[in-house]
Image (cartoon, rainbow, N blue to C red; front, side):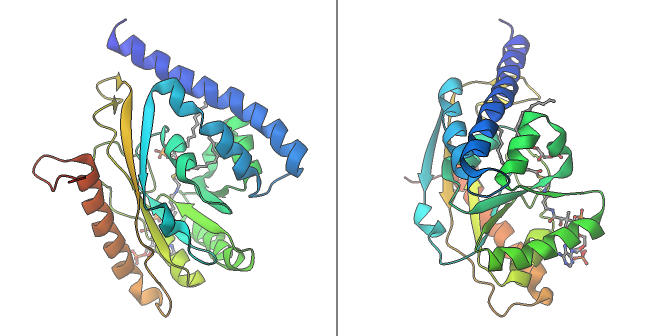
Length: 251
Ligand SMILES: CCCCCCCC/C=C\CCCCCCCC(=O)SCCNC(=O)CCNC(=O)[C@H](O)C(C)(C)COP(=O)(O)OP(=O)(O)OC[C@H]1O[C@@H](n2cnc3c(N)ncnc32)[C@H](O)[C@@H]1OP(=O)(O)O
Ligand SMILES: CCCCCCCCCCCCCC(=O)OC[C@@H](O)COP(=O)(O)O
């Protein structure tokens, strides 16, 4: 098979798997929990965690203990591809919902399963409405004791580097006065590259970094907080990916 055909087949299979399994998971969620609730994430996670075996992907996870903070927290991670849903579900802590673009709601059964899992949908084209939704989340995450997962790059980026961060995630953490927990996935470029039609088996290193406290910070500190997360995450990304010229992972 030519690489292009192979790539197209594997991506189509991934999408088909997501659509079919979402439909099954939606039935399970409705039977067990009856509607939209973060409790459904446990069911979704159990289904999605099997996907890696179909694609020969392995995850090596470090720092899971950093999720064990008391109470709510904001999790930020790098976003490379639609394949990230596998890496997300590999480590997702209990009581954690994600922020996603509202267009995802219209992806059939995949949109339905996201809705049932409690995903917070935002309109990226309207900063004011996205801010309003996220301010509301800052309140509910505290009263309902949930963690929130945001991709602060705001879009997929498979270059092996980070895009500049959007500020919303860090405003959210400061408004809710909850710690920020950065999570970094090593670069997919060695096994996945949509430009060159590469999609083989591979290993993904995941590191959950220590929480960064936000108690006492105000909106004036958001830029600093964002910059600090960006530099630690970028360093970690390069270390985990063994970038040429960058610090290699010694382990
Ligand atoms: C069973 C099988 C199933 C199979 C399938 C799997 C299913 C699994 C189920 C479930 C998993 C679900 C997984 C979902 C995954 C989804 C992934 C995505 O969709 S990624 C795209 C959306 N995510 C974001 O975009 C990030 C959040 N974005 C932001 O936070 C932005 O900041 C946003 C939208 C709020 C505004 O974006 P701006 O483009 O306008 O840029 P800015 O620079 O950040 O903001 C402009 C100004 O507004 C201020 N600002 C932003 N937020 C503020 C706030 N809350 N309060 C006050 N000021 C704020 C900023 O400080 C900035 O001002 P100054 O330049 O600093 O002066
Ligand atoms: C009706 C056709 C449905 C096709 C089913 C596709 C199944 C793939 C499901 C994986 C969930 C993907 C979530 C995700 O990773 O979304 C990417 C966006 O957040 C980032 O936005 P952007 O488009 O990169 O700006």
